[in-house]
Image (cartoon, rainbow, N blue to C red; front, side, top):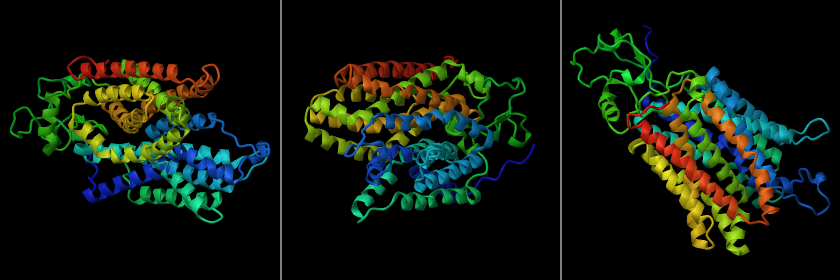
Length: 484
């Protein structure tokens, strides 16, 4: 058997994680800062020729398309991750991100080319290509995988900050900072990402393979329920040494059922014997079999409903606050608070999210999501300032917790071999569902006369139903029942 790849030093692994979080913050989801960028585009006169003198467009559908574009592209991005590996995928993403900034800063428009559209398309594709390959780094320190993953997700949630900062500088600097200056200068960051991947980033996925011997009366099998759990006692009979084993198990990127180095085995036994035990795991199955499973259907229904709900609220928050509060001044105050809290709470919530994923039973997080989704939904329909403020706080924490738990659940259930394709398909489907948010917004503002009650209540019911299904499957999966 070939010798395993040398394990990088702790300092190097920490450096890789810090860089990954930095790139998640500065590259992964910058397109979600379009709302902050839009006033600058108006000031610079971009697309002014489409407007009549004195007219300023407020078309809400633009934001919906931008929010869904990156999600729809997740399937080909995930497929690329499975085929190319994390390093090549990250390099591809950084290259596209450079092109996106270059074309957007170029600002050239003609009858046959619009570099604003082309640039934004490359930015929307480059961000996820940088973000998704970083997930496997959470396996560098299995005991803190949830904390690492929540750090990346929190950085992704806050990645609208660069455009928010640019708008603030644009307003303060006399004459403003031109779009070309900002976007061409911003190409420095993806160049740094390329250098980091070539000289510091891991060449392969972190898996920490460990050979485990099977007692002679057990035949090797792909059924995870029949795997022998090694004992921490090296003298236990029937257990071969790592170099003599004919059976190999690789830990998944986020799996808390982590079969790692010998010194990790006592904690592994505790997990496998306790509340986190999973039966008939879908690890090792083909991508088609995983996608055809009820687990995939459950998670995809959950993500489609909640992503549509989250994006609809983000895009219509000002209109909803005005409808429920009936006060322009309170609406303006809460809208500014929401803009500030959305990235800030996601970042400050990293330790809490990491604690929940690393130290609490798996089923607790879906239950918390169920309660938070219900609480946010009901408070979001309240007529008082305090209720709306508390609802916004819950929403701002609910969003990163859902993203992080969803990613962790996909790998815990399906493994990392086909993660890109399986997770990518789910995200693509959620993006397609999200396209209905634009006509839904038009429906509210026309047929429903601006009344959000019916739509919000429908989202609460659908959210509770999908979250309840998620909780039920997790409870069955961790109580010895089949994960089919």
